[in-house]
Amino acid sequence: METFTPWTLFVDVGIISALLLIGKLMRTQIKLVQKLFIPPSLLAGFIGLILGPYGFDLLPLSNQTGTYAGILIAFIFGALPLTSQKAQGKTKEIASMWAYSQGGLLLQWAFGGLLGLLVLNQIWPLSPGFGITMPSGYCGGHGTAAAIGQAFGQLGHDEILTLAMTAATFGIVSAVILGLIFVKWGTRKKYTTFLADYNDLPSKLQTGLLPDEKRESMGESTCSSISIDSLTFNLSFVCLIAFCGYGISKLAAHFMPGFELPVFSCAFVAGILLKKVFDRTGVTNYICPKTVNHISGALTDYLVAFGIASIKISVVIDYIVPLSILLLSGLVVTLIYVFVMARKLMKECWFEKALFTWGWFTGTMAMGIALLRVVDPKMKSRCLDNYALAYLFIAPVEISLITFAPVAFVNGYGLLFSGICLVSFLAILSVAYFKKWFVR
Image (cartoon, rainbow, N blue to C red; front, side, top):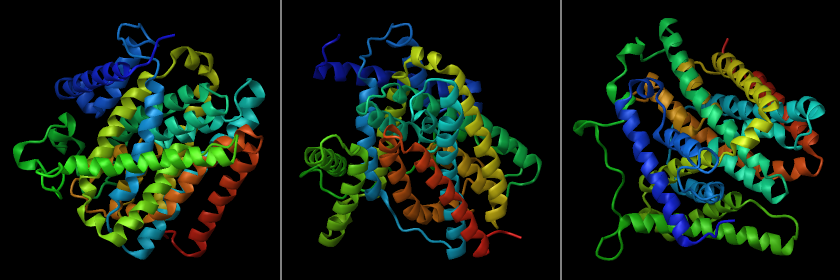
């Protein structure tokens, strides 16, 4: 077994950084990659997977790449409270977006859990939490997949990390490829509000390179560089919050042996609490949400690359049949929900909002925004404004699902957990119906 040292981390980060640049070069030069809008982080992860220790073993990546993903997600969740900005929208539009988004999230968790426990686990000897690898990878992306995998690993189910990462990778590929097919279909059917023809898409969206006149500032400098660099200042807050989350997790484990809260959940809670302190003391005025958002985005790129590179191909092959059934079934259910309920709950720009949630429900939030920009480049649909406010109510539910799902499934309460998700999903749709949020 290899010995891990700080230089091991140095080599791993160096290799993944090189692969990210190669992925970006592929995005700018290869037409097929441009047409499919494949993110460089995804390409970097695939190259690392194929050439790394779980593939042809040509790159000297360590066996700690999966661990990095679990650590990076703590920084990303810790940064979330610092990136919140004020958004505006009509109350009914926000309520409809909440019902639509929260309902879809709960449906995925309910469907995955029930399909796994009632069908797949009856045929194959699988982990109790096998079914929820689909929603953790789809709705949550590689970040949630890392968190869920780490939590199950602590409970003795190491294979869940690879399966959840595989689900996240399959989801983001589906989000890109099917999303662009939906754009073509939507323009042909005249469902799009702001895009008349798919061929009108600007080249900057395909290459990902911005011309001089389209470039924007990455954030504001709130500190004089003679004292501390502004980037260092903002990064320090993110690191502090993640560290506090780690401390809370270890403190809880000390007083409650055998019950260890996920570090990313604790980091999110620590971020909320510290944000309130920063608001009261005026520190928030010197934290740049845009800069923190870019820090979070950079960490996410590395997380995706490390996460895909850490997929153990042998484990995927062992579970290929039930995993294929789970992922394809989840994709179909998500597709039906997104495009049926968007027309029912969204009065204006339903297609744009459906495309955004398709990207989110199957890939990542960034992928949802990327698809939204394809059909709504100037953000006239107010989709993100409505979502930002609706997510204030969605986030606690999502964090709770990720935090308590591993404990529930491992201890035999998976069916109860999935049933609660299903009942909650039906309750939300009932509220939307009786509140007359449905479009006639």
